[in-house]
Amino acid sequence: MLRITKLGEEVLRKVAVEVKPEEINDEFRALCLEMFETMDEANGVGLAAPQVDISKRFFVVTADDDVRRVFVNPQIISTSSDLVDYEEGCLSIPKIYENIKRPSKVTVQALDENGKKFLLEADGLLARVIQHEYDHLDGIVFIDKGDPEFAKETEATMKKRAARYAEKQKAKEAKERKIAAIKAAKAAKGK
Ligand code: NI
Image (tube, rainbow, N blue to C red; front, side, top):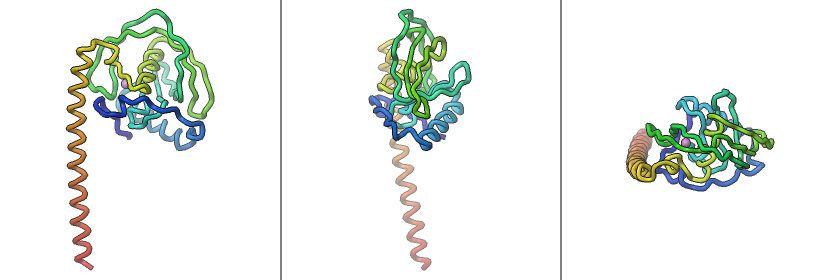
């Protein structure tokens, strides 16, 4: 399983870079599979590369039709003018949900996991998820499109959490280094 990044980590606020054609290979397809598995495990319907700490322009989606879709270097060609409300959540912002208005339909052009170009007209949940995941590639998260006060509060809380997590990781690594050093010293003594 891949670790899902959380709001407060820099990668989620960066504009991701395009995937180069030569990067769409077996290794890339294996990574996409791992992203699908990570997403399913977390009960998500979409997962963007920055959410697994990769600042590149691609995401995976399994919306209401259960089809696994990979979008590489996606471009939103058009959106419908009507806005619809839907309660969104995000694996990178656990336990936070908010009604967000977005266009009900979207036309997107992208490459699939084999580098083949496709055009997709989506509505319903699929259109919602595509727009949500697309935003991740530009460092945008769903709360940015909701109540600004709530977004500010949520981000501040998540930033504190991310800082605590980073500190814990640092302490864990220091402990591991210490144990390794003790083991090495013991092994040297035994010789
Ligand atoms: Ni998200």
